[in-house]
Image 1 (tube, rainbow, N blue to C red):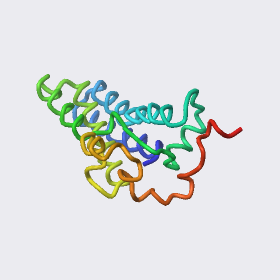
Image 2 (cartoon, helix red, strand yellow):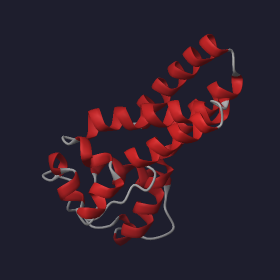
Image 3 (cartoon, rainbow, N blue to C red):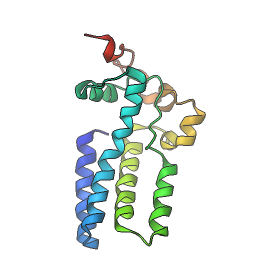
Length: 155
């Protein structure tokens, strides 16, 4: 799913949470976590394509799926479970609960739009598959952009 979609969904959900709970902290943490979970892509892009990362090329690499391996450290059902437990154990702290809502919405949307397998967003499952992009995202395997060189190799 693209950044502007995550932003729109996160804004809408944050507004709904504010209307229901009257909590700015819950709304803000939902918005932030619903969008910025994707910062973990920086790690994968840097590992595969080197440093420094230019913004335009970063978005091209992610959109075109130019990875051999992809970890997506923050994209995991296991982390979602931990967020839920942390929210519950803290008496539904508004900051943690808002982050839980944003995080869960982001993962559910990604699972629905980006994958053909519910396990795609399990860190353990990806680890067992060796983090191989083509195994994890087989629907993107034949993407015409997939086999281009690293953007750092081009002038």
